[in-house]
Image (cartoon, rainbow, N blue to C red):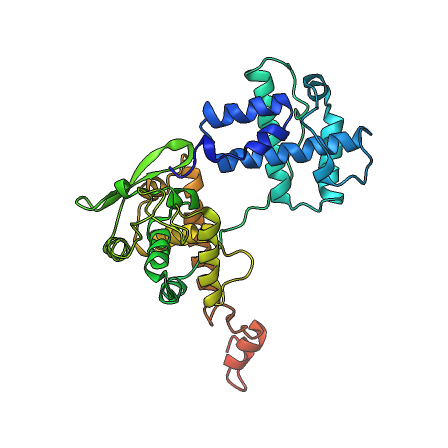
Length: 353
């Protein structure tokens, strides 16, 4: 894999309080969380403990974040944190930092997991300050994705000196639904040409096999024909940067954004992860793929995570039905029944004649 313990930002460990440091190492080693995920935990906890220092008066309220050192926070201080402190932090995220609901939800989850660790794994607490704290209301939204036509446009926009590499990257994203970390972690030995498949190492170092369609196989072959060989520092890495290193996540993000911008999709909401949504959506809507098969392709742990793509399809069908030009046509109003009966009576004759 491209990621391992050596890739984790050791500065985050050094800047963290001892209990937080232990927790992060536990997540990296015992729980086998990806370094990117643990870095998010670390940054969320750093934000929390910097706030605690301000809130408790240990530093002036206007002290910039970067100047607040939290590595000296003792175990006792962490264990004394109350639900009131957490509520004030949540208020701070809304009023001062203007964090979105999703960001606040993630920080709430991080704190819950940290205090669960202190209770279950360390037996340092019997009750969490997060107990009975309501999570921010999360408005569920359908993921953004590219249409089939936009996906084709994206592939056709590829050009330049690294076009074979870039085309291969986009092709794997759009056909296999890989995560960013999974793509940069691909090794040459993971590709099995004879069986037309690729080994992917996902979250928690869980492996899965994804079959490669003809477009993927051709894109890989064309890239391998020009892939640098001399002076490459990680000879087993599939994708190589211009510096002859394993390509980094930031470089891949830059590549994807560049080509999305080339087809006028460079605005907010479109990113590498949207290509994963695109692959899943296209497979489900155009390939008649069973939702359980899609779950395995994407590497989801729970079927519920994959079911968003069935909801996506239902939403599209609803929108298509409403887009029909006859959707708002109403039946012609019947005339007054009394008038109708009067019209049906011959002149000079009554109803009973």
